[in-house]
Amino acid sequence: MKSPDLAQQRVRSLNALERVLDWITPWLVEIGSWALGGLIALNLVVIAALITVGPVDRAVEIGVAAFACALPFDVAGIVLLRLIKDARDSRFDDLTLKAFQEAQFPDFEAYLPPANERESFARRRARIALAYALVISTLSIALTLAGLVASLWHLAPWVAGAFVATVAFSGLALVAVVVHSLPPQSEAERQLRRRHSTRRPQKEPR
Image (cartoon, rainbow, N blue to C red; front, side, top):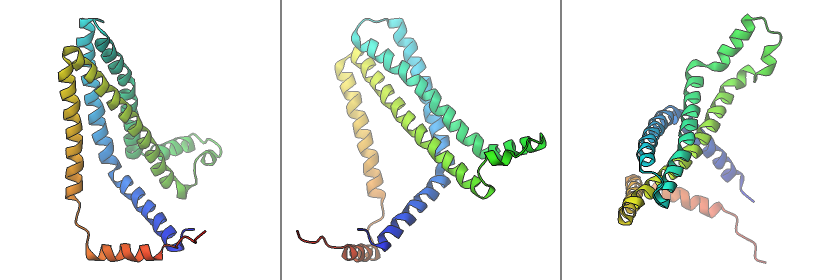
């Protein structure tokens, strides 16, 4: 059973992470829009080139299929990110409420969250849309990489192998940069960790 201190710390940590996510949402939307736009351009260019080649072998067919399947994901991701940005900038809920009030629609506020909860509901809606956009972007990137590998395999298998190795090395390099840029553990942090470890309840012997 978790102690009250650990439970409260977990709740506060989740609240802090939600606040950080709310603050960086505009940046994530901007970066995601640029990335998905670049993927759309890449997919269209490569598809156009592969269509002129024709279905000469299985690698070309797989490449065209992967790029074609990635395009709808790219478009859906951009639409989601655009909805997040437009709903945040134009305050769509407030405009909708004002429009129906001016039209004298009866009791329209009953169809919306309470006034004191609309801001938190808007942030929750943005987080949900951002999560779906992240999943869609991941699928699109995976399909695009599969299409690139298949296209390069058609050219020469060793070129596809070199591309996969370079992608893996680049990912490991990014992880290494993040890990090495983290600040070293301070003495206060070590003491805090030891304090929490001593507070954990010991398991009773069977």
